[in-house]
Image (tube, rainbow, N blue to C red; front, side, top):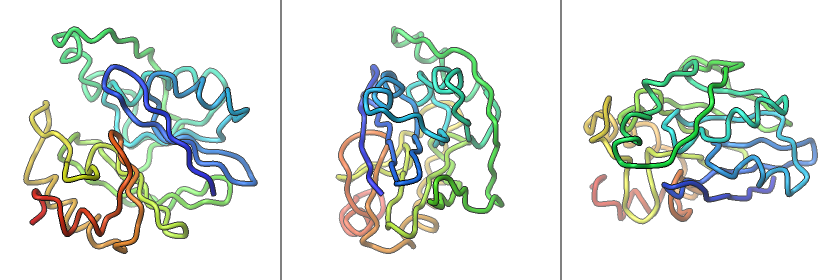
Length: 204
């Protein structure tokens, strides 16, 4: 399993490409993510969305037009995307509508794509539709905007944000995973769950 990262868009958002001998999977779709995959000669079998904030979905329609299956915890939802907020900030934004092929929930079994099981874990608080994806076999967690390395957590001052709910979810659903698990967040560098458990000021 090989993981490559692309950072794109106004908010410098991370998208990840997971490659195996059987194919590839994309996680989140910031601006430029589709071309990032294309330049590597990869057409992902699926695209997993951690949540639908505008900076994570800018390229989703391009993946869908190419026949890539879209997985998310909610159908396409302008309310979840915060496009009105982006407009107030003056962020140039283009998020063409897309459809979700498979909606997963907290009860969903691990999503198996190309021989890899992605366990979807709900951790709302940053956004009501926020999920993280745990790959137990390779000790990796794609954490979206729930938890960042270097002492950060997702913002909760956006519409639908809930600070206490986010902290509770991180402590009960993320910090309980093995400390050596690599943290691959939606913004910034990678880290580990153990490092955040010991050093993140929000979690002490």
